[in-house]
Image 1 (cartoon, rainbow, N blue to C red):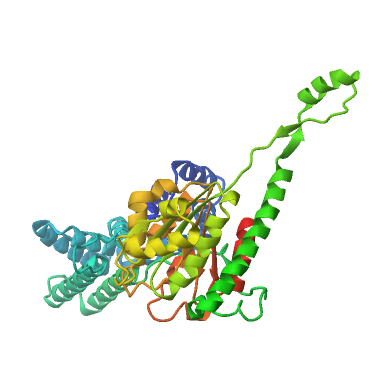
Image 2: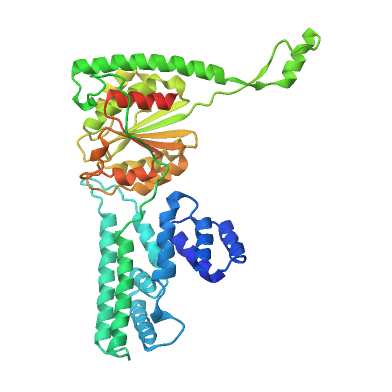
Length: 462
């Protein structure tokens, strides 16, 4: 039973389900005090230790069913039957052919059919996490798709070889046994095909979704940022200035109160010496202010930039409320624009960004490429005090969304908040990848008008 569990652990790790050595040792100890041949007890022990959060549960369920049910077959049982002999004979012959080819991908598929899914799971995991490389000139994210098609083609080739082998009377089994063997191979190849085409979706039960907003302003507050006229933009800026002033006063008072820590007994008693030991003055320990860091990734294409410019305006006006604010803009390329806000007034900085930053504003939006560039060059900017705010509509023109990178960013920072200028009813339409991205966010909300932006800023600061 221990060896079987260790094989399952290897498959979990190959499929990117993190299992530590300590957790494996805990499982071995717990299996000794339950009946491991009772599947419910066995399953419960494994699930309790290996599926450590709601985000891991779906992946664990899939791997458990694959390893302990789909890979189990009457044809490959302990009892030697004509069917099992024929099954083993086909596997052995295909293995001999693959030795001459040296094709690792086909070997992984064959091992999967033989009940050893480790190599194939590792192949699929690498495929799902494959990062595209930026190409010069005409850029296309076709790497993952081409590899996926190659695996699909080799699954079909393997199926054809099995059918040829069975049709050529190489296996010394009768027709009924051949039918059972063919059905078993088809079932396992179908399982391999499902793993290839049905990517694992992360469950995010802790996701905060904001469906309703307060009505702060009846008219100007409801107009989408992308539809504001010049006069309305100035009106919105006036509202933002008033909001900033109010929030700064509230935050300053809050931090002033928060600085009063617990009583410092030693200093209080020492000061009481002046008053015959009576503690007239209470001395409190200084409590350092804890201000969060903000990192902002802004899509600057089309109507998204209309929301982003107001968001950046507020964040940099409220810098006293945060220890640091760093900003990046992207279409497909990524550029840091923090220095613009340090050297210039907010509105001047926004105008300079649109003119001077080395970004092709007419390129197709590519969130996957932007996330990869940020990960490669700016990952140290994230820590457990950092809130990562992403402003964008998640429309990536059907290119590789690379949502696994967002999961890596989530592991590095305190929380990820996604502000989408589109209303939620549009998040699953067309080329939107919001469904994939929100699985790795702590909070997602529609933020396309002044009322929605005010609600978010008040929650962020207060």
